[in-house]
Image 1 (cartoon, rainbow, N blue to C red):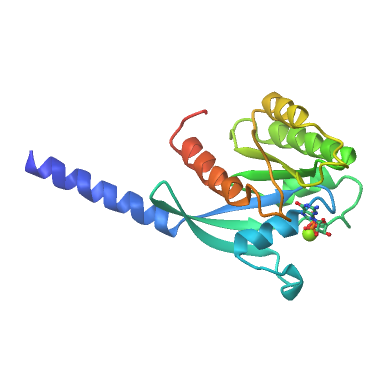
Image 2: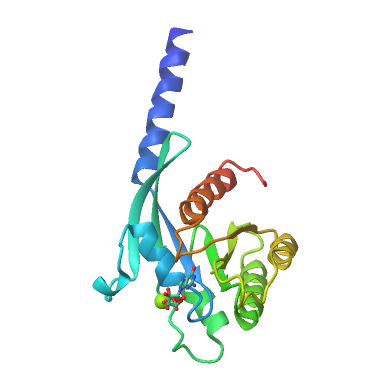
Amino acid sequence: LGDTSLHDRAQWSSDSEDDAERVDRVPLLGDHGVGKSSLAGIFAGIADKDDHPEEDTYERTLTVDGKDTTLLILDTWSNDKPVRRVEIVLDVVTGTAYVVVYSVSDRCSFDAAAELCVALRRRRAAADVPIILVGNKSDLVRSREVALQEGRACAMVFDCKFIETSASLQHNVSELFEGVVRQIRLRRAGGSE
Ligand code: GDP
Ligand code: MG
């Protein structure tokens, strides 16, 4: 009995070492101007993104529910890609989870986000990769073009988590990245919700 518990403990400690060394890659996808770099900057704790124009990957360890997880946020998807950019980015950028961003004040960016979700689910259906759909710029109340319910419905169709954020007001941004961590853990544990 004593041997078994020692063995269990050894397994636990090696598991947590793996977790400590693991870095989960999370690409930020979405149309130009929706706020990807702003969200990434907040994640990285950078007050003014203009001070760090060269950076497009950000590594940070978050403590969520008492455990540490290191995320590498990739803000590498620029808009100067060719027409078939959806296909290209999904070939090039691999992630443990994906954050797909649109602006609630830009209907076209919402359509583009849905298109990205389609492409991700088509390519990676077997992997069951977590996708977090983000409606950013929730502060722009008067120029809103996409209702909260539309975002929710879209997320439901593609089996994504959904959150509305405001990078400008720093509203729901830490909740977003904590949600990413929780989704990664759930998928890794074999859960589906
Ligand atoms: P990206 O092209 O997706 O990386 O978008 P940026 O982060 O560069 O943001 C594009 C523009 O939208 C910038 O002028 C930002 O200041 C602005 N912006 C980003 N997030 C928000 C937000 O939550 N609310 C408002 N009102 N503006 C935002
Ligand atoms: Mg950007």
